[in-house]
Amino acid sequence: MRQLVFFIRNMLSFLALLVSILFLPAPAFAVVGDLTVTGLPPNTSVSLTGDDPKVKLEGKTDDKGVFVFQLGRFNLPAGSDVKVTIAGDPKGGRTIPSLRDGPNTRDIRSPDRIVDDAPDHGFNLSFQIGPEWRGVGKTGIGTDFAAGTSAGDERYLLKFRKRVPGVAPELRIGGEVRDQRFQIGIKGFVGSADDNATEPVSGRNVALTFHRPFAGSNGIALGATGMHGKIDVDSRAVELDFTLQDYIYKFQKGPFTLSIGPRAFAGYDSTDYDGNLQSLTFPVAAKTNQEIKQPYGGLGVGVQKTLQLADGFELYAGVNADLAFYHAKYDGRQHVVCPPCPVAVQNVRIKTSDSDSQFAFRPNVSVGLEYEFSKSSSLGFNVSYQYWSKFPFLVNPPNPLKHRPPSLKDDSVHRNLFGVFYKYAFGN
Image 1 (cartoon, helix red, strand yellow):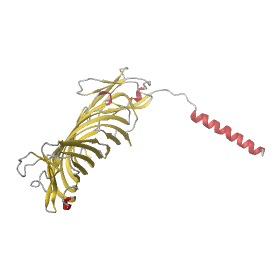
Image 2 (image 1 turned 45 degrees about the horizontal axis):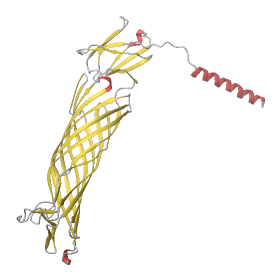
Image 3 (image 1 turned 90 degrees about the vertical axis):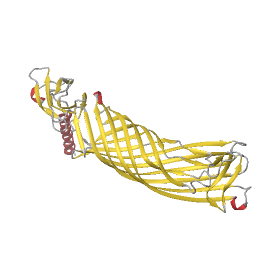
C-alpha cells in the first residue's frame, strides 16, 4: 500500500513538472519574421523599406498579387513599421504598421488589419434579404360599360396593373477551385398585392361575363345597379443559378478587377389571381381563382467589375445577359351565384386552361458595396434591376366577344430589388 502511495505521489510530481515546462512562459526575443503581402497587382514590381536604411527588399508579385518579403534576417523588433511601394502607383508607398513577432500577413488594401498566414482563397457563404417589386403582368375582372356601348367595346370593371411587392431571400456560396472562381445561388420570392374598384348604383352598366358560354348564356347583365370588384394577387418564385466568374476573361490591374464568365439558371414562378365581384343591389356574386405556373431555365453571360477601396470597402457592379425559355400553364375556375336568375344559371361553375411557351431576353444590372469588418466576415448591400422581354400574363374576357375563354399572352415586365447581406469566408 505504501509503495502504491509513493508511486502515485511521484507520478503527480512528474506530471506537475511537465505542465510547468509546457505551459509556463519562457524567455524569448520578439522578432518580426517574414511578411506576406496580399492584394497587390499581379506580376508587378514591389519594394519594401524600413526605418533602418539597411532594411530594403525588392521583388515581383506572382499572378495572384502576393509577395513574401523575407524580413526575418533583419531581426526587426515587434511593433516595427515598414513601407511597401508598388511600381507605377501614384499614391506612393503605403505604410504597414505594428508588425507582430513571427511571420505576418497583411492585405495592402487594409494594411493595419492583421491577417492570418493562410492563403487568400477559399470559400464564402452569404445570405441576403430585402424587398423586391415584381411585375407579373396585367389582368382584369368584371364588365363595365356606358349605355349605348357597341357590343365588344365593353371594358373591365377592375384592371390589375400593379407590381407585386414582397420579400426576396437569397443564399449564395462562392469559392475558388484550381484558380477558377465560381458562384452558386438559390433565391426566392414571396409577395402579394391587391386592388379594388366600384361602379356606383345609377352609374354605368355592369355585368358578369362567363369565361365560356354556359347553358346557352354568355353572362348576366345587371344594368346600372352598381358593382364592387376586388382582386388579390399572390406571387411565389424560386431560382437556382451557377456562374463560372473568370472562365471567359479576367483582367486585374491594381485595385480594379474585371471578370466575364458563363452562367446557367433554372427557376419556377407561380402567380395566383383571386377575384371577387359583388352586385351592390342584388344577391349576385362571382369568384375567380386563376393560377399561372411557369418553370423556366436558360444560359447567359455574367460581367462583373470590382474596385477595392480603402479600409476594407469594395465597390462592385455586375451585368447579366440571359436568354430564358419558359413554359407557362394556366388553370382557372369561375363560380357565379345568382339566385334571382333562371335555374340554369343560378349556380355556374366553369373551368378553363391554357399554355404558352416563349423565349425571353433577360438582362439584369446590379451595383453594391461590401465592407469587410473582420478576416472572415463582411456586410453589404445590393441594388438590382431586371427586365424580361416576354413574361406570361392572363387575359380575361371583358365582354363575350373578346378574349374568351381566358388565355395567356406575353408582355415585358420589370423587377427591382434592394438587399442587405452578410458574408462569411471559410476554408482558407
